Image 1 (cartoon, rainbow, N blue to C red):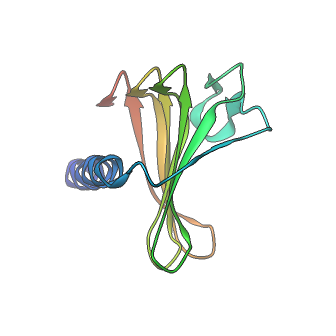
Image 2 (cartoon, rainbow, N blue to C red):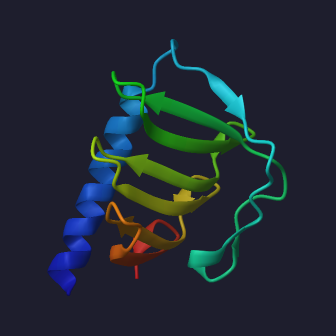
Length: 123
């Protein structure tokens, strides 16, 4: 199980770092009108009491690659990454730090794996 957590952490860190590097000035901000207050999958961690600005990046085919929420310029909310096949990886970030349960889903929406974070560390 420790190897699985390490592998998942490596994938999440690598994916997150690459996604942030790939965000360019040609990408644009969209405001999410629905307020995300609680991530049901993360033991009721309050993510945001205000509607965050969501930064989207896209694949060349037009599909969404990342959804990264910002509140006051800091990543805060449920971060989502989609691979080319549409598999979803998501995790809650509170004030720039991963906090809560990260999930990786298959194409049918079933959970493939999960890992818990507290203050940006695997627990």
